[in-house]
Image 1 (cartoon, rainbow, N blue to C red):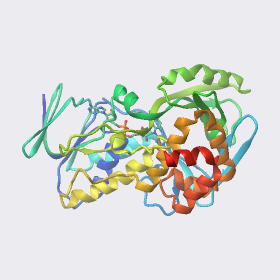
Image 2: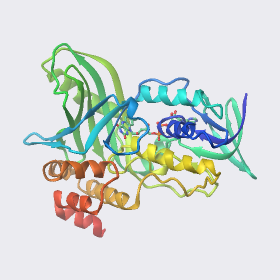
Image 3: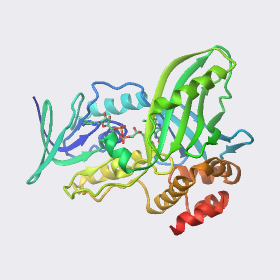
Image 4: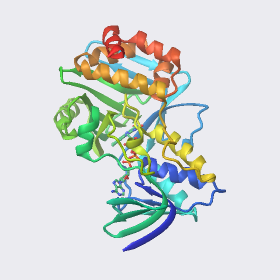
Length: 378
Ligand SMILES: Cc1cc2nc3c(=O)[nH]c(=O)nc-3n(C[C@H](O)[C@H](O)[C@H](O)COP(=O)(O)OP(=O)(O)OC[C@H]3O[C@@H](n4cnc5c(N)ncnc54)[C@H](O)[C@@H]3O)c2cc1C
């Protein structure tokens, strides 16, 4: 039985938990002891994190950006539109590089401990303290920050739109990819219930991640996409080998259940760190981590602090999702209109929560009007 006593207990050492621990490691003056409990026994390269970044943004992990692109494409059977951005780059961080960097920072910080292989099963408030338990664990802390995701059955209940994806990282024998251009939404098509497209991240001319992605109002396991993915891979006129696989189902828009005011601080998807309209969460977790860690210094942790999103972007995201939810058959039209009509920098700002009123106006001007007016009024 492992016994732990600390000031702050972070449950979950994934993107949000490690981002927070990393930011805290940079803040040498604060004196709180922090323990991160993670259920995994070890880390492996399970995610390809991408996000839009402008040159000036305060961002702690520029040193591990592996690739970045200034151009991305939307395409359907009939049309193709390419966005080239002046100010934003679409950046890629390999999850393993992030895990290595952040866990090293924790190891170098005498105030922090990362404990792997600990599955938290119970959190209870007892007076001033939280008692946290798992099969081999008994911990006591003044603050608890919970970054665990919703359980799958909760997700099915609370999610507005599901984003499922299944992909492979491949190496080809010959030059094959245009390494300057991301296929953000390639071959977009809808069948009335599902909108499907391909995502292509060309790391080099011979190395890329290819993912099949679907948006739908019902949950489908990502393995449902495997046949179509294989069909596409078989159609490639090049020899390749698969070096890694990546799958997932992300919630786009979560209708949170009511929560008890027990004082637990939430992170990750329970704190809307996943952007509703895209399911992207890496950048929001960085913003959230910086917000929370500033409170560590003067011990003003409070459950109402630390929303990574903003009210106006979230309003637009939810409106956008309502449009998709009611008109999934129009998805191809909507995304191709964005590709055609929206300025690349406005699009990148929207995707990275930096959009201002005029960028939202551009989004509204870019897409078919009627479903949006209906969604705003509903
Ligand atoms: C394959 C994949 C690719 C993605 N790509 C992108 C992308 O390109 N760009 C982007 O912005 N976002 C992306 N996302 C979305 C989002 O950024 C990630 O899901 C991100 O990891 C979310 O961070 P998190 O900390 O909320 O969750 P996680 O990173 O999943 O961390 C939660 C942690 O809690 C641990 N845990 C769970 N239960 C317990 C328990 N009972 N006790 C202890 N620990 C527990 C888990 O093991 C996990 O490590 C992707 C998601 C996936 C799945």
